[in-house]
Amino acid sequence: MMSAVLRDSLLTRLRALNQALRVILDDVLAPRGLALRELGVLVALEQHPGLSGAELARASFMTPQAMNETITALERARLVARAPDVNSARILRARLTESGRRELRDAGRDLSRVEATLRSAFDDREQRALASLLDRALAVLRELAVP
Image 1 (cartoon, rainbow, N blue to C red):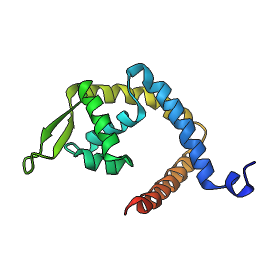
Image 2 (cartoon, rainbow, N blue to C red; image 1 turned 180 degrees about the horizontal axis):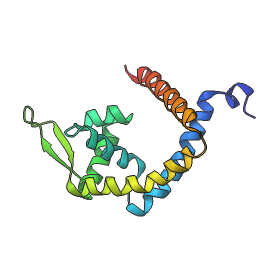
Image 3 (tube, rainbow, N blue to C red; image 1 turned 90 degrees about the horizontal axis):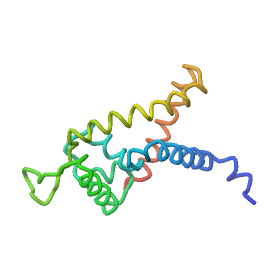
């Protein structure tokens, strides 16, 4: 039996929220052949073109090895292309291809329906408060993850 401390903890609630969200988003993305982690890479590259695999891994809380596998899968799908860094050929810089931009746009439309459903549970003030609290929690967790 779960102790009252764990049952009422923020960590337990956040874990449950994360699991529910992952299942729903994976179901929405599955017809596109995308996994949630792959979508995360596409979003990161749209916001910051030219990131290396190591930079993407740090930003995504993934190991460099797992990120390399993800980028390789996206390259095979022709959604991402990599090219050597101008200063160091050992560093590969990733960018979205035109197909990657199109896939990201289309997936965004699919995910906007989930977003709209979630937002409908909160009024405008609650949405702003929730966003602020989640941003703050994420910042704290990022600080904990930095060695």
